[in-house]
Length: 142
Image (cartoon, rainbow, N blue to C red):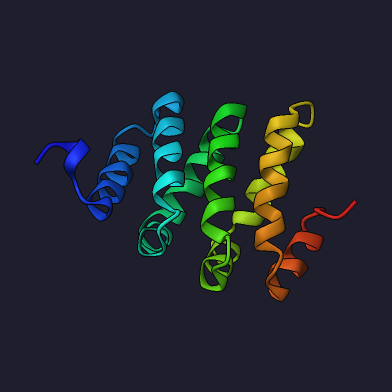
């Protein structure tokens, strides 16, 4: 079956596998995250990405902190994943997403597009009480 005709769930798995195989290629990772952000508009895909991909996404963000485009794509993906989904908000907080996002903001304070994506992700993630505490504890409140 060709990728363009694959089921959305298959596409999610394919993108996560591509990310695992391209952990040293920030441009490929950025592209995969963009595709996952589009796929995450579907609730079943969102849950699959959260279950199978949050640790990978956060790990890649930490590995490539110096790449603002990758950080922006990752935050856009986290923003989308956390939208209207309390479970995903909790998972992102539990797996250390908040300090990674805040670190990206600090590393690229001069990048308005990245900061917008970081703030968008945090705005959805902070709709969880525990995550609000984490955001404050990691210096995310000025």
